[in-house]
Amino acid sequence: MNPDRRAMIDGQSSPRRRNPTSASIDYSNRISKPSKPGPSKTAQNATKYLTEEEQSRKFVADEDKFVLKQSKKKAGIRVREARAKPIDRLAFNLRYIDAERDVLDDDDGDIDIEVGAPADIVHALSLAQLKELESDISSYLILETDKRNRRYWEALRTLCADLQSKIYADASDGRVVNSVVDDIDRILSPKTYDQLEALEKQIKAKLRSDEDIDTDYWEQLLRHLLVWKSKATLARIYDDIKEKRTEMLKARGPTAPSKQASVTTLSADATASGSTPIIPLAGNEDASNVTNALYDREAARGISENEEIFTAEEEVTTSSKPQWADKYRARKPRYFNRVQMGYEWNKYNQTHYDHDNPPPKVVQGYKFNIFYPELIDKTKAPTFKIIREHGRRRGESFAAAGENDTCLIRFIAGPPYEDIAFRIVDREWDYSAKRERGFKSSFEKVRDDINATQHILLWYKKKETKKKKA
Image 1 (tube, rainbow, N blue to C red):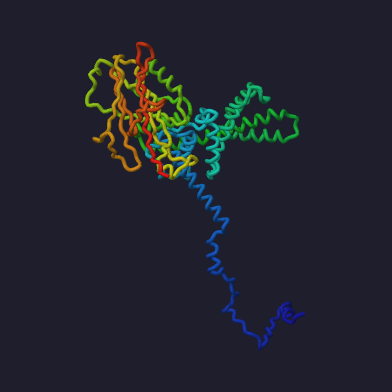
Image 2: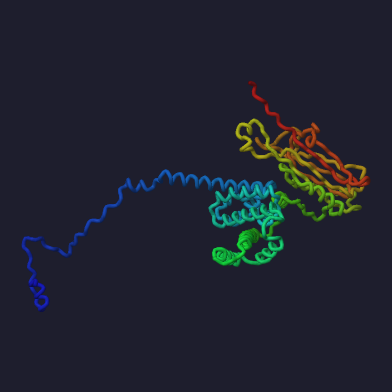
């Protein structure tokens, strides 16, 4: 045994033997092991640079983000200008809860535009419109990264697919007859999103089990459940949108919306829904049965692909009341107007655009339909006149380069109807009187004794583009 250890066991202290030639130990001056050297400056700089694959992914992500932002911005512009498609209305409604929304793209009158329920907008569309909307939704889904926004678009796409399948479906197809489908809808419609989600798990577990079940029925039930789940998702998001908009309205305070904002709301809703647009009556607007019948008949004709509802009504200023104001109750005539939009292939647009990437649409003409079924003097047709403000004459232009001057077209009928005016683009009219084009003015009769509707077809002359000599 080591002598030192033996002495320790016996409780004796033994002097430490030290080699006189070995180095002495100084406990007050410890020498630590050198630490591992850090990365060099070159290695630190290398971490700042991305690989080629990472750079490519980042570039694509930034590009997608920019394209999505531009799509939302364009949708907002089309809604404000009353030429929105269904996808524009759906994207515009989402702006209230969009965390990535750019506030610089907002307009002061946006909050006055009514928010339509997403499900109602989709349900009002035709088959062709549903197909177009489904394609537009897919474009948003490819670009969208926000989880709630993606749920919104996925729910809308499911709803579009379901409505299309119902249109395509024939009474003889499928084993689930209409009465069973109605029963399924009665079961699912009152359930909340959480209840539908729990039921979905139960149905999937039943389909995976070895039970002897009617597989076709349960699969059909599951398909209906996914549709109702999408509706519940849209209802949840729509509640959030309304709540956020209400908060913004309260924060703004009691302010009457401008006339232009209300006009934009009306036209956008009518265009987005695809159904017959209903123009609300003003307090003194003609609401007789004959007027309503005339309006409904004109609205039933609908609008063509390049047409939009036109309601850019302007206030009519008069220095004094008409002489008949004390004798008859003044009322404003109802109207159903359309504006024709199209592409202008001038020299600039031919150089910078093509048919796959067309230029912005411009106004090409108007169709005015003003209803006067209760004119006192039925022998005199209503007239109209063009008013150019600020002393501008015909042919003169005060507009900036690339813009068009505007003017007022004022309709004058006589008692008991007030004058009504609309703001239109001031350009040279086409008097060629071609079929469905040119300039036409007529006063249509409903019966032999009633002149009722003033029709004005106003088309602009196309700008001729000079061809280059060979």
